[in-house]
Length: 212
Image 1 (cartoon, rainbow, N blue to C red):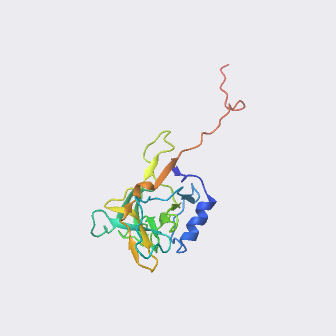
Image 2 (cartoon, rainbow, N blue to C red):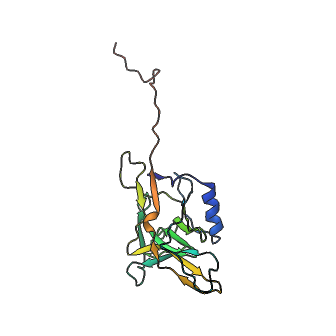
Image 3 (cartoon, helix red, strand yellow):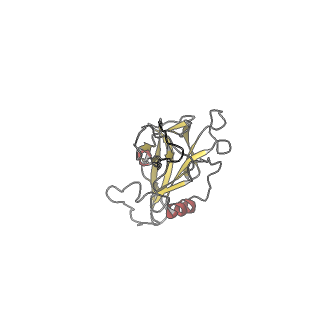
């Protein structure tokens, strides 16, 4: 299936580029779709209760960041399977690259993922101030249900890992502390995009059969 990640948004495009000056390299391409951008409508995580800054009071605004960690602690797998594949059937693996979580395919088949050798299918960012997630998609992603399920979601589901949001707060004299990591993997969704029905008309000139 061809993909259309929500509606192409100029604001999402600008947000993604503003927040991530470390440009995604070795991006994939897809003859059936243009690069798609999507931006969350609100912060990916919500504060529970209130924030206590202590006697020094609040410093700068809280800072939102992404992390990629193993579930249950410990080391990440050598290849972090995103739980998604391209429409062509290639597994997509997750890597942390600067401020981004990037989904790449093992283009050269060496059972390792690098930005130099392996094509990016999508990348995830977060606005450090608003906490909104931003996604750019370079290649179509497989949605498994056939038929008329055009809005079917392919949801990020890393195997043995999680895409997290961590919020760091700072008090008035520069002391900082980070929140627990919050798993937001399931908030990254790629909706299916079905074909458009063609129009036909009767071919009365040469498509007629006549019995004489």
